[in-house]
Image: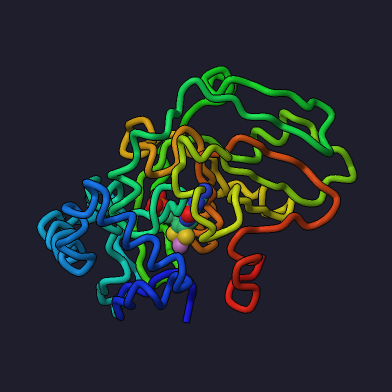
Length: 281
Ligand SMILES: Nc1nc2c(c(=O)[nH]1)N[C@H]1C(S)=C(S)[C@@H](COP(=O)(O)O)O[C@H]1N2
Ligand SMILES: [Mo]
């Protein structure tokens, strides 16, 4: 099974974590205030979230006034034609995968305050004509921000519909002027165990890294997000800057990015390094 916990089957913790780590982690939990918060169990929190999802469901009627008479007399309406309901904000921000802030889904939100998303610099390196390091707030002024509602799917078999705020990754790359040798884009998350205490445990290789082929990176749907639901990105969702690639699994959406490097050869990616038979590039 996947190294990430499967949602439907609720695996025991030792199934998703190497045994030694699992035992040490238990000790860690017992000795922290977090234990009270997680004692209700992942199952309980899930039920709570799912209840929220249902309660928030809204019907959206398509307005057809003024449209031409439909020439397709036999067309019947199906569920496929309905616009997607957005996942409620509390679920988007309290059910997360961000192993640097904990491996249980509710831990990233609990630990979020240890990450300081400002001030924050991002460096652009490698096969570009304009390598530079910029303050993230200066970078935001380079582009008009837009809202995009995408479905994010995790390999663990859960998904969410999230209204992101950000800009196309391609706009940034064009500004940096890739050289003719640039074939891939490599992304790196902040490495700082003080701000990301999960990096003290060898659950994965740190820092988290991801990559895209240059054509994927230039695709108009690939975006860098700096917010969601019209607000600044919460730390647990990858503040101040994270990747969103809607046609790929969620693990591509690397969080809290400090470095973007254009390369000639395929860069490593964290989950592919951890379990190459389960995660491709
Ligand atoms: N740095 C970092 N980025 C990460 C992860 C992570 O553990 N660390 N998890 C990935 C996975 S597996 C998923 S499904 C998404 C989850 O994003 P969300 O918590 O905003 O829903 O973030 C991705 N980005
Ligand atoms: Mo994921």
